[in-house]
Length: 338
Image (cartoon, rainbow, N blue to C red; front, top):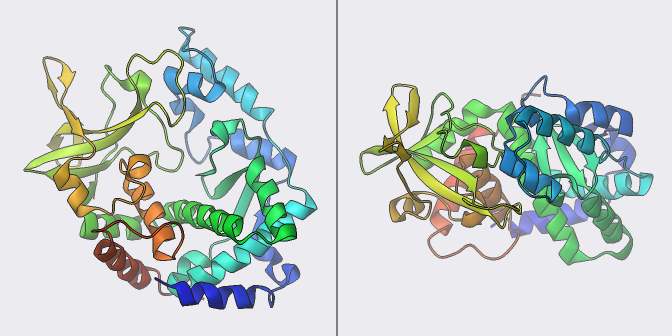
C-alpha cells in the first residue's frame, strides 16, 4: 500500500530546503532537554515507576529499598543521560522527516501538520528504545548517529528503518493531540472502550511495565460477554529483569461498573487469560503482536508503518484490517485546519 506515494516522496525531498522546514522541526538543546525529560508537570511518568522496571532500566537486581528513594535515584541517573544533537544529526534527521511528512500528508494531513519535537538521550536511557513523552520524541544517540550514516552513505535499508521509527513515534505524539479521534477509531474498528484508568491489583503492581507511549490503563475490551484489560508486566519471580525480554502481556478480567472497573479476583488472585486469545486476535491487526498487542496506541502505531509500506509484508488475515484502518484514519485526519 502507498508504495507509489513513497517513491513520489523521495523525488520531492530534494526540493525542500532545511531553511524552509526549520519551523517544522524543533531540537531541544541540552539544558532545555534536561528540564523537559525530568518534568512531570504535563504527564506523570517517573512517579509511576515500580521496583522491577526500575531495576530493568538500570541493569541491576531488584532492590527492597523504599520505592520513593529508588525513583529519586533513577531521576538523577536520567539527568546524566541527556544529550544534544550535532548539526550533522539535525540535518540528517530533518531530511528523513521531510520524506516522512510527504507520505503522511498524502494520507493524514492533520498528523503531518504537527511539529516534530526531538530530544536526544544516551542509549542507556530506556534501554535505547525510541519513544515519546508528552509532545516530543526521545531519540537515542544510536539512531541520531545512524541518521548521519544514511545522510552520508545513502543506505536505503537503514533509511527505511529510521522512517519506520519516526512514523511510529509520530503516531504516539498524534494520539496525545487527537485522543478523541483515536478513541473513536479504536472503538469502531477494534471494540475498545475507554474508561477511567483501572488500578493495578496489589499482587502484580510492583511488576507493571509502564510504556511511555501508552500510559493510560483505561482501554478495555469485551470478550465472550466479559470485560478485560490488556496489560504488560515483568515476568513473575525475575530478580534481574531485562526490558523487553521479560515482558509478559495478558488480558485481566474486570468487574466493570459504568466507566469504572477493577481487577476481578478469585481467592484474591487476579483472573487472566493469554494475550493471544483467539477472539481478541481476530478483531485487531496482529502487527508486531508480541510487542504491542497490549494497548491500542501500540497496535495503531505498528499498523501505520505497515500501511505506509514499511517492514515485511502483512501477515495473512491483516490486510483487510489495515485497509479499514487506512480508510478510517484518512477520514478522521483529512482536514489540516489551515
